[in-house]
Image (cartoon, rainbow, N blue to C red; front, side, top):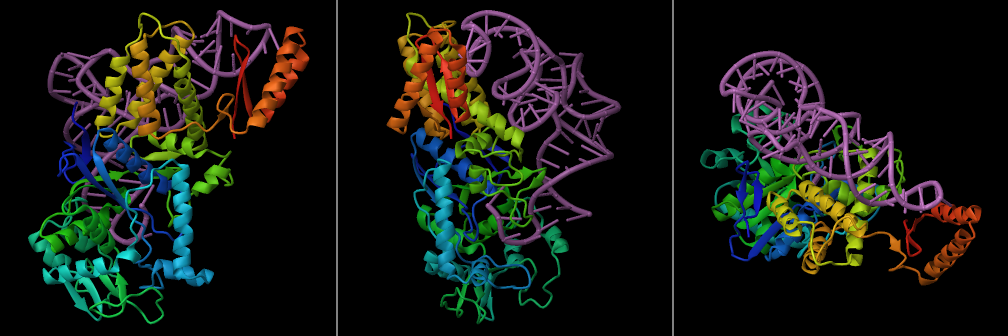
Length: 491
RNA sequence: GGUCGGUUGGCCGAGUGGCUAGGCAGCGGUCUGCAAAACCGCGUACGGCGGUUCGAAUCCGCCAUCGACCUCCA
């Protein structure tokens, strides 16, 4: 088998993936901060790393996939400085912070399920790992790279940068950072504007806080990922993923914290997905131009011409390479919708193909190309292109313009099951005549279509068309075949 | 201002120093009572200007332009 190659942000190169422990992979991905409903932007890392998770398993690795839930610790950088994002929302809505956390965690999980994103192996919460974070902070102090002041603990970036390359992941130079750091908090207790909080003293009105060696407080922005990733995956571990927007400062800080805690870098391969844009601009909470996933599924948003199914969103995202920016548009989404349908239909058709003596198509070659595409840094757009080549083959065989032998047919079945369903994670969303969701409904549709056949036999085209058009209006897709008819219902 | 990354046909999106993905839309044809689906055929694109090369959309330089990060953000 050929090597699996991934792009490592750390080296800015494609590298052969070699796990630290043969046969096992530790994967950590930054999950959501649960203070709002998930939007399209959240779906990209979730889907990207879901495909990575699925593919690693397909390759035979035993994978431990950790994706955190951030439920404490993000500071709000406005008038309410020092107040926790989640606590702030709680006051507005007069809910307990943990009530908010629970609500949005539930909705996030529901959305992920809809997108056919597999649950991670472990989904740790920051609030559930306060002790681990306190220990991590203590290690940073012990190693001399963090200092306590007035009940808060800060990471000493200057001291760290003197002996370690701070900025190596994001390609930043410490001098540049100095000149660019805004001087907003002149009265700050930090030694330097570059320093970041690893533990923050809680103001009296602050709701979420825990006791620590430095007094009542809460963990800083980046502490949780360092504590939780290494707790479950060890250090160093194999792959750390996340959105490109987390590269700096979050991931840079994680490297520094890791070195401060363990004396070596915590991660072998860093992977970053690019962002989704809307009209060429980043879709983000701060810009207020995001569309929630639920809004996609219902079509209930000004920018949406119609609803789009979760799998359509998934297909749309995977038709672009994860490291490329992807621009949202109704047109692109509708193109994805139709393409997905064609792929799913052909995949279902494989079951009905009748093998012959000879194969006129190169199934082994197709499989090789599909493997190669995935091995080349998860090139899902290329993989999908090859799968569409196969779609043409499948349809041609069905039309009698090509042939396939028994063994090739078996390979083809496995190939499409593996890539379309297991790895890319697509699934059929239509209720077809065969599988059917509601048996009575199916029987009624069959009845109507049988009446239509009778009408056709009498050349009563008016009745025939009336039945077909009415069913089409209701969302059924009717196809006439040699044997009679086929139908499918689309939500 | 600093750092990084884009600019591909009507739209979306891959990719490689020469063999010039794929999807969607469009056009013509086959099939069909008409459709739908499917199949066959068609469209020859890589921001601009230079340079390297037998040959560049692909490498280099300059310019233009867009974006991301530098502050919480997937």
